[in-house]
Length: 171
Ligand SMILES: [Cu+2]
Image 1 (spheres, rainbow, N blue to C red):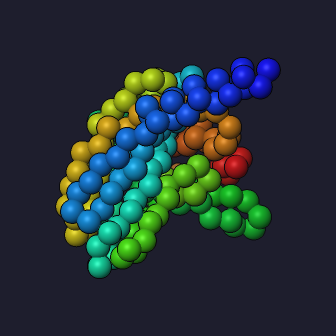
Image 2: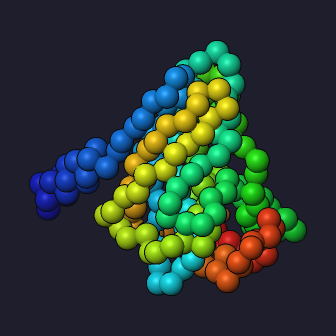
Protein backbone atom coordinates (compact mmCIF):
# COMPACT_ATOMS: atom_id res chain seq x y z
CA UNK A 1 0.00 0.00 0.00
CA UNK A 2 2.81 2.38 0.90
CA UNK A 3 4.56 1.62 -2.37
CA UNK A 4 1.32 2.21 -4.26
CA UNK A 5 0.82 5.58 -2.56
CA UNK A 6 4.42 6.53 -3.26
CA UNK A 7 3.90 5.56 -6.89
CA UNK A 8 0.76 7.67 -7.11
CA UNK A 9 2.62 10.56 -5.54
CA UNK A 10 5.32 10.35 -8.17
CA UNK A 11 2.74 10.24 -10.95
CA UNK A 12 1.01 13.30 -9.50
CA UNK A 13 4.31 15.11 -9.22
CA UNK A 14 5.15 14.25 -12.81
CA UNK A 15 1.73 15.47 -13.96
CA UNK A 16 2.19 18.74 -12.09
CA UNK A 17 5.63 19.25 -13.57
CA UNK A 18 4.33 18.55 -17.06
CA UNK A 19 1.53 21.11 -16.81
CA UNK A 20 3.65 23.85 -15.24
CA UNK A 21 4.85 26.36 -17.77
CA UNK A 22 6.14 29.89 -17.54
CA UNK A 23 6.87 32.90 -19.71
CA UNK A 24 9.05 35.97 -19.31
CA UNK A 25 8.78 39.47 -20.67
CA UNK A 26 11.21 42.11 -19.44
CA UNK A 27 11.20 41.89 -15.61
CA UNK A 28 7.91 39.99 -15.45
CA UNK A 29 7.63 36.21 -15.19
CA UNK A 30 4.23 34.64 -15.81
CA UNK A 31 3.85 31.26 -14.18
CA UNK A 32 1.38 28.59 -15.25
CA UNK A 33 -1.50 30.40 -16.93
CA UNK A 34 -4.57 28.13 -16.75
CA UNK A 35 -8.29 28.36 -17.21
CA UNK A 36 -11.10 26.31 -15.79
CA UNK A 37 -12.88 24.07 -18.27
CA UNK A 38 -16.34 25.51 -18.93
CA UNK A 39 -19.39 23.52 -17.89
CA UNK A 40 -22.23 22.89 -20.32
CA UNK A 41 -23.41 26.00 -22.09
CA UNK A 42 -21.61 28.37 -19.71
CA UNK A 43 -20.92 31.68 -21.42
CA UNK A 44 -18.18 32.78 -19.05
CA UNK A 45 -14.79 31.44 -18.06
CA UNK A 46 -11.86 32.51 -15.92
CA UNK A 47 -8.09 32.20 -16.12
CA UNK A 48 -5.46 32.33 -13.42
CA UNK A 49 -1.68 32.74 -13.26
CA UNK A 50 1.11 34.02 -11.06
CA UNK A 51 2.97 37.21 -11.91
CA UNK A 52 6.47 37.83 -10.57
CA UNK A 53 8.35 41.08 -10.95
CA UNK A 54 12.18 40.92 -10.73
CA UNK A 55 12.48 44.58 -11.60
CA UNK A 56 13.02 47.64 -9.45
CA UNK A 57 9.85 49.34 -10.66
CA UNK A 58 6.26 48.30 -10.07
CA UNK A 59 4.34 47.14 -13.10
CA UNK A 60 0.68 46.51 -13.88
CA UNK A 61 -1.24 44.05 -16.00
CA UNK A 62 -3.52 46.47 -17.82
CA UNK A 63 -5.28 44.28 -20.40
CA UNK A 64 -5.63 40.77 -21.75
CA UNK A 65 -6.63 39.87 -25.29
CA UNK A 66 -7.91 36.45 -26.32
CA UNK A 67 -10.08 35.10 -29.12
CA UNK A 68 -12.05 32.67 -26.95
CA UNK A 69 -14.60 35.28 -25.87
CA UNK A 70 -16.06 38.56 -27.04
CA UNK A 71 -15.07 40.35 -23.85
CA UNK A 72 -12.01 39.90 -21.64
CA UNK A 73 -11.89 41.68 -18.29
CA UNK A 74 -9.67 41.79 -15.23
CA UNK A 75 -11.70 40.88 -12.16
CA UNK A 76 -11.40 40.68 -8.44
CA UNK A 77 -13.64 39.34 -5.69
CA UNK A 78 -14.87 41.59 -2.95
CA UNK A 79 -16.93 40.90 0.11
CA UNK A 80 -20.07 43.06 0.18
CA UNK A 81 -22.55 42.62 3.01
CA UNK A 82 -21.15 39.15 3.62
CA UNK A 83 -21.61 38.14 -0.02
CA UNK A 84 -18.70 37.46 -2.36
CA UNK A 85 -19.06 39.47 -5.55
CA UNK A 86 -16.95 39.87 -8.65
CA UNK A 87 -16.12 43.23 -10.10
CA UNK A 88 -13.95 44.48 -12.93
CA UNK A 89 -10.71 46.28 -12.07
CA UNK A 90 -8.78 48.56 -14.45
CA UNK A 91 -5.42 46.90 -13.77
CA UNK A 92 -3.64 44.33 -11.60
CA UNK A 93 -0.56 45.60 -9.76
CA UNK A 94 2.70 43.64 -9.62
CA UNK A 95 4.94 45.30 -7.01
CA UNK A 96 8.68 45.71 -7.63
CA UNK A 97 10.44 42.55 -6.47
CA UNK A 98 7.08 41.05 -5.58
CA UNK A 99 4.48 38.70 -6.91
CA UNK A 100 0.75 38.72 -7.49
CA UNK A 101 -1.32 35.57 -7.68
CA UNK A 102 -4.46 35.28 -9.75
CA UNK A 103 -6.38 32.36 -8.31
CA UNK A 104 -9.92 31.03 -7.80
CA UNK A 105 -11.71 33.20 -5.26
CA UNK A 106 -9.41 36.16 -5.90
CA UNK A 107 -8.07 38.11 -8.83
CA UNK A 108 -8.76 36.52 -12.20
CA UNK A 109 -8.99 37.11 -15.93
CA UNK A 110 -12.63 36.88 -16.96
CA UNK A 111 -13.87 35.75 -20.33
CA UNK A 112 -17.43 36.89 -21.05
CA UNK A 113 -19.57 35.70 -23.96
CA UNK A 114 -17.43 32.66 -24.74
CA UNK A 115 -17.47 31.77 -28.42
CA UNK A 116 -17.23 28.05 -27.59
CA UNK A 117 -16.63 25.73 -24.65
CA UNK A 118 -13.27 25.68 -22.87
CA UNK A 119 -12.35 22.00 -23.16
CA UNK A 120 -10.15 20.33 -20.55
CA UNK A 121 -6.77 19.32 -21.98
CA UNK A 122 -6.82 21.97 -24.70
CA UNK A 123 -5.19 25.39 -24.54
CA UNK A 124 -5.54 28.79 -26.14
CA UNK A 125 -3.25 31.80 -26.67
CA UNK A 126 -3.80 35.00 -24.73
CA UNK A 127 -1.90 38.29 -24.99
CA UNK A 128 -1.04 39.89 -21.66
CA UNK A 129 -0.41 43.63 -21.80
CA UNK A 130 1.79 45.16 -19.09
CA UNK A 131 2.19 48.88 -18.58
CA UNK A 132 6.01 48.72 -18.51
CA UNK A 133 7.03 45.27 -19.69
CA UNK A 134 4.86 45.40 -22.81
CA UNK A 135 3.03 42.50 -24.39
CA UNK A 136 3.58 38.76 -24.22
CA UNK A 137 1.59 35.89 -25.67
CA UNK A 138 1.06 32.97 -23.29
CA UNK A 139 -0.61 29.63 -23.83
CA UNK A 140 -3.44 29.15 -21.34
CA UNK A 141 -3.90 25.48 -20.35
CA UNK A 142 -7.49 24.43 -19.80
CA UNK A 143 -7.82 22.28 -16.71
CA UNK A 144 -10.63 20.45 -14.95
CA UNK A 145 -13.09 22.71 -13.17
CA UNK A 146 -12.79 20.75 -9.94
CA UNK A 147 -13.23 22.25 -6.50
CA UNK A 148 -13.62 25.95 -5.95
CA UNK A 149 -17.17 26.30 -7.11
CA UNK A 150 -16.51 29.80 -8.45
CA UNK A 151 -19.83 29.90 -10.28
CA UNK A 152 -19.15 31.57 -13.59
CA UNK A 153 -22.55 30.54 -14.91
CA UNK A 154 -23.73 33.47 -12.79
CA UNK A 155 -22.53 35.64 -15.65
CA UNK A 156 -24.68 33.83 -18.15
CA UNK A 157 -27.15 35.87 -20.12
CA UNK A 158 -25.55 39.09 -18.97
CA UNK A 159 -24.95 40.35 -22.45
CA UNK A 160 -23.48 43.81 -22.34
CA UNK A 161 -22.47 42.96 -18.78
CA UNK A 162 -22.61 45.39 -15.93
CA UNK A 163 -19.56 45.72 -13.79
CA UNK A 164 -21.30 44.55 -10.67
CA UNK A 165 -22.17 41.19 -12.24
CA UNK A 166 -25.13 40.84 -9.95
CA UNK A 167 -25.16 37.32 -8.62
CA UNK A 168 -22.81 36.16 -5.96
CA UNK A 169 -20.04 33.68 -6.51
CA UNK A 170 -20.34 30.63 -4.33
CA UNK A 171 -16.74 30.54 -3.23
CU1 LIG B 1 -15.15 37.16 -12.79
